[in-house]
Structure formats: structure tokens, C-alpha cells
Image (spheres, rainbow over the protein chains, first blue to last red):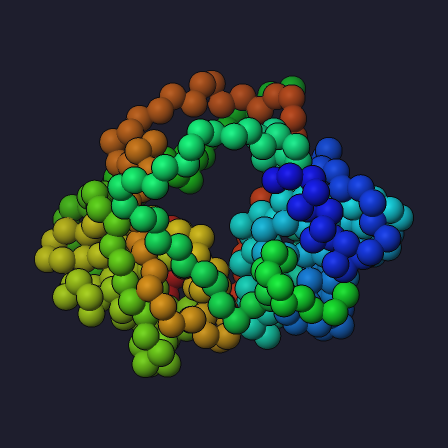
Amino acid sequence: MKIDRALIIVKRYFPQVEKVEDGESPLNIEVTANDSNSAAVRSHASCAMAVASKRKTKADGVIISLSVAYVIKGKKAIRYRVPNSVQREIVSFDREAGFAPGDYTLKTFPQSLRLGSHKPKGPHKVAGRKIKFHYTTGIRTDLNSSETDAA
Amino acid sequence: MSTKVNRIPQNHKPKSIALANVRKYFPKVERVEDSDKPLQVEVTKAVSNSAAVRNKEGCAMAVACKRKMHADGVLIARSVAYIIKGNTATRYAVPMSAQKEIVSFDREAGFAPGTYQLVPESPANRFGEKREFGPGKLTGKPVRFQHKTTGIRTALGSDVEIEP
């Protein structure tokens, strides 16, 4: 992903942010039953994981999307990868079936997916079969979409 | 200090363990094999409403698969699925998109209607792929943290399974 694009996404929620960088080490987060109860469904900035992450990191704000998380501290946003175990809980939480309390980890991105590591891979010709994607519905909006929830 | 690890990695269980797991639900099964092609399954709203939560044989995905494949039975665990026809069970991997719906469904928040895919296991995870894992000594980095998703169906190999 390009740094500019990540910055635009984060600035929609936290306009003061000026820099986005990748997390260097995984972040262990404990989500309690209280976090789950006090949080807002389908909200990137105030879901159970966001509330728990904010408490743990003492951050100014947190954005949790289905596959990417940003922890905001001052003018800087630190990007983490949301693992499958958390993705499943997010879907459950956004459909009002709860976020199971427990220990979760926000992971770092592998070298090839880190900000600024994008390498053009040729002309991108479309040939052969088209890949079918399934889109999970009934959950928070995509961070890239024009619809955003209030931060 | 090093410790010997005796357990088999989750993705490399021998065929006999898979067969034993399937036979708990379908005792007449004698053979387990990997699928070669993906399987597209349409889950409708009616199927989602009529299905049973935390039930590997009666969940929305299982009902839809059974209908599509005219199978004798279907087992849908969180990451693996078996379609039973006669005495043969065919194994598929459950992709992440379906896993998310399974968790939602088991927590009584519904299975979103739509088209899903069951996919063949990756070449490295297929039956008969033997890989050497070395002496199994634990040195250096501590054991990797793993989160277990709760409030959903039991794992296929677990001791606390419901009798079919």
C-alpha cells in the first residue's frame, strides 16, 4: 500500500495525523467483557477492540477495520495487521453477537506488504478466469469506501 | 533447555485421524480423500433460518452443501469440511469468508445469504504429503501466541463433541 493512501484514510477519522508507519512488533491486547459491553457496533473507532487497544496503548485514538488497524499517537498513526482470529470476532461483534473476551494480538505486516514496499508487477493483463470474491456483509464499512462512520 | 514436542501439527494430521473424526458422525465411512476442485455453494435465507447453530451437520452451510451435492451427509467444522457420499468422505478447506459467517451463525447472529466456496486443501496440506519437521526442539523464541475462538461449535477432533 502507498503511504499517501493510508494517510488519507486515517485523516478522515483523525485529521491531525501527518505520518503513517508500520508497527515494528506485535501488540497484545486484552479485551474484557466490559470493553465488549461498552463499545459501539459497526464503528471503526469505538468497537470493543478499539476501546481495549486505546486503553492498552494509551493512544489518542484507534481505528479497527476488518483487516487493518491504526493506533494514533499525536501526529503519528501506527499500522498493524488484524489477524483472522480478530476478524472473526469483529464480524460477530458487528452483528451484535458479542466480542469474546480474551487475549488478542495485532500483528505486524510482512516485509512485502509494508508501506512503501509496493513494486509495479507489469502490465496487469486480464487473462483466464475471473476470481470470485465473497464480501462479508452486515459489518462496518470498508475504510476505503466513501461511507464512513463518525470517529 | 529444550523440550520435545510430541503433538502433530494441526495441518498435517494423517489420514487415519481424519477418518476417525468423520466416523464419529458417519460410522459407515471407510475412505477419506481430498477434493480436487472448488465447490460453490449458495446459502439462501431460507436455509439460514432453518439450520441449527453450533451443529456441524445441521448448520446453514451444511444444509446448503447437502442440497447442492445430493450428499448423504456433510460435516462443516470451522476450517475443514467433509462431504459424505456412500462410504467416501471428500475433504475441503473452509476459506476465511465462510469461517467468519460460521462464527457469526454459531453466535446466533445469522449466516449472510450468498455464494460461498469450499476449496481444495493447499498442496502442502493434502493427505499423503509427508513433511519432516526436524527434531521438534523448542529453542529460541517462545511458543507462538494463539487465540481460540469461543462460543462456536467444538473442534472436530475434540473430546467434548456431541454424539450424532
